[in-house]
Length: 81
Image 1 (cartoon, rainbow, N blue to C red):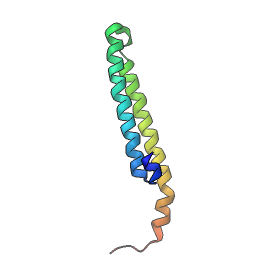
Image 2 (image 1 turned 90 degrees about the vertical axis):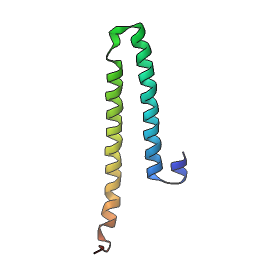
Image 3 (image 1 turned 180 degrees about the vertical axis):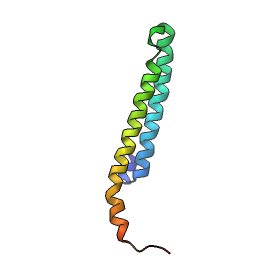
Image 4 (image 1 turned 30 degrees about the horizontal axis):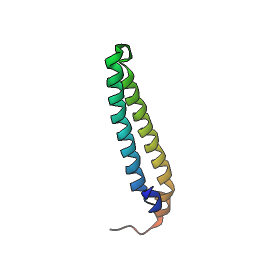
């Protein structure tokens, strides 16, 4: 929320990464408890890890696509030599 108020792309991205890190920690705890009671779901931790990885990858691609117009705007500025 603070990143949106301050219009800071870096703060918004850091908040998203922190949220994903919290979800990942909670999923590790949850999958360990589920595995303790039922060993047939050994794949749960890896599956959640792959989903989180794909989510971070998609967010990174979105950030790159959002930055292309900004880079094109600054292309005609004076070059430092």
